[in-house]
Structures are given as structure tokens and as C-alpha cells.
Image (cartoon, rainbow, N blue to C red; front, side):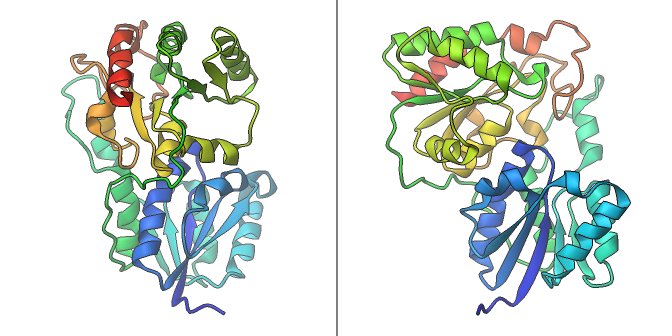
Length: 331
């Protein structure tokens, strides 16, 4: 038996990084509201992310089994059996809107994420950019629960991991879009220089192509080790939590490291920390970027081709700046 006062259905599907970003918020909400049970509805593959969230139940969904209106109606019927009294929509897309519609008769108390689209358009437009920090996404997620009537005070601090044992450096050189990815040859050079200095480098990536690239890097030096294609997501998350430092693009690995309390040096190209997607608890001074380019940021997610064609935000970023930052932090 439990003594939960209410149950909240929490919707968040989307990409790996976006889902990982919600974890610190859910964890702090749960700690501050222990009388509430959180029913997390997300893609089944993301279950390992949420193991640290107290008072929660993960409801894994394979979206291939719930295609179209009829599929979502089926999913809504299954979710009704959990007898939740509230919905926190942390995604705000057509799929979650339809789910809320089907659940509207049984769950009337609902709140939805405000993505701040207008401010983000002003931040990324070519002319007359409003270059200023926007509301962090973590606070936007917390606002959903505040709109349901709860008090949520975010710490914006990293949770110290209990197993900080490794002394190596994690490096995740990939991102979903080339506009967010530091040139691989330069990143390989950084890995080699770190290895030559005596540091152990651990590489992270996914998919066959990334596996092959990182395997080649691993073969270059005995101090370089690749995790790509060799371990499960849950094992990678645990290992990242033991590292003192992670180097990542504006990508999922930045948020995975953040949820397990690992400091991140993040490299930014077409996107910008001002959009609100800096890893939870990470320091702004650890975000490496070209501050003097008038074209940055040109998109929120990095999914728009560079209109200058040559990606100056990444191509002109000195690798020695990144290497120096890593050595300063790790020493």
C-alpha cells in the first residue's frame, strides 16, 4: 500500500537529449512533493534515465504499436487504468494533444509545456537578433508542475554521484546534425593529445558509422577506449556518472552526464546556450563557442543548414581552446 495523494501522468517522448533533460526536474519535484506519484510515459528505451526519480513508475511505450488516431486512442485507454488525477505534458506536440483529448473526461486537471517559440524565433533570426538568455528549459518543465498547483524550487546544481572513481575523460564527439558537431579530425587530434599527455580517454557514440569511427580512434593509442557498440545504454549512463569530466557537443550526452552529476565541457556551433538547453547544473563558462559571430545562433536545434555554407561557428573554433579548457578543469 502507498500513501500517495495524487498520481500525475507525465508525457515526454521526443529525442534522447530532450527526455534526459527532464530527469533532474522530475527528481527535484518528487523530492519536494513526496505525496505525489509520478507516472512517466516515454519511449521504452529511455527507462534507464529515470531510475533516480523517487516515487515514480515508468510506463514504457513503443510508438510503433500506437500509430495514428486509433493507436493513440488505444494508448489513452491503457493509461486510464492507472487512475491518474493530473497530466503534465512536457512535450506539447500533436501526439500528446490527442492523448490529452482522449483522456479529458477522466482527467480534467492538465498543464502543458510553454516552449517559448516567439522568443526563440527572435533569438535565431538573421537580422536584429535579440541575443539574450531565454528561460531555461528546466524551469519551463517545472512551470508545468507549478501550473498544476505545486511548489517546485530547482537547485540548478549537479547531483554528486556516489561512485566518482574514474580519472579519465569522456568524449562524445557526435550530434544529430553537422551544424552542432565539431570537425571530427580536430576532435580526434584533441583525443590524441590528451592520450599523449597520459590521460585516459573514453569515447561515446551510437550506430554503426559512429562505432567504426571511434573504433579507429581507439586503435590509435592505448589510452583511448571506445564504448560505442560495446555496452548497453544503462551501463554507459552508470560509467559516465563515475567520470570527473565529459566533453560533449550540444547533444544528448551533455544531458546524460548532467543527470548523473558529471561536469561537462560543451562545444556549441549553430546553437547557443541562451536558448535554454544548457545541461542541468552545468556552468556557462564551460560552454565553448564563437561569441563574436553575428550569425549565431541560427537555429534552436541545429537542424537548419548553414546559410554561409562553411560553418564558421565550428570550423574557426580553435581546438587548442578546447584542449586548454579540458586540461585546466581536469588538472
